[in-house]
Length: 414
Image (cartoon, rainbow, N blue to C red; front, side, top):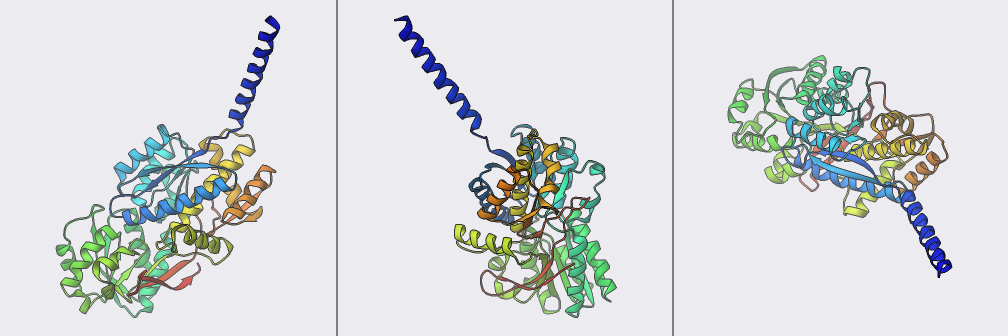
């Protein structure tokens, strides 16, 4: 009887050891925080960001390194954005934060959360030049972005205005670091090309029910063109009033990345916007872009319609690969070690790997073998400089009368 009991105990203990071993082998997905604008004036963009993020997470899992995306709504405003970031850091214990979209949210999140808590932050859409030289990040290196600075976009935007023959411009801009930074760069570029900014008026980040007074003030200068420098949430309101007042009879419109929208034409009438130009961060033709477009269309039924969906995908992939690099190097999965791997997986030297399941499988295998990789992104070479910035082309695009209401005219390389 004692011998039988002993055998049973041995079997039970052995089975328990096997179960414990299996549990150890089951890697928990790495948590990545996702600060996106699900509500507020950039809500249209947030929907697309979530689709691109989910595709990236699905492909990372298929490649053999699962990640878990923890989404939080910034409401396109600084205070809720900072609170959402704190929840991601303190409650969800994420090792990296993707976002935010608006520069006016990204900067306070960096200053209040990601830098002091030593969690790398990668914005996919914040373009304010201030981000390159954020004082709070000096010597700490926790703020990155996969979208180009408006020091690039503003130059192209000013040149587009000059090329269209506009001599005078009025600017209606969102009163935050994004709006102010792009206004400054546009003004320098446009006036260098011989134009003149004759009026500029800010509006609040929170959409207002009417902008009649501000429009009247801008139009007193009788500009050749008005630059709508902000977000769809506000622009949809004031452009409706712009057309109703008949300002379009004497003043053209010019747009930027923030007012590149597929919802505004539907709301305002595509015929009213058709032909007007804008600028936005572009992508480089290549294997990664082709793979992303094909995979996105296969999953969702159409091509990515909005700016910065490609840079969102790239940010998630780079964060995931950096976490994988840290894990395979047997380093603790914390913010500092993930930060230290961002340039190692995104910058040369290293074997080039592309977007898509096959490319990410190759990347994971190389990292397991202790080899260097150089991820070539959907939006271009995501090579972070000392400030965490990247350089990508700038697209010139136009509104059209047919869905998806936007077409790319040309791409300008810096």
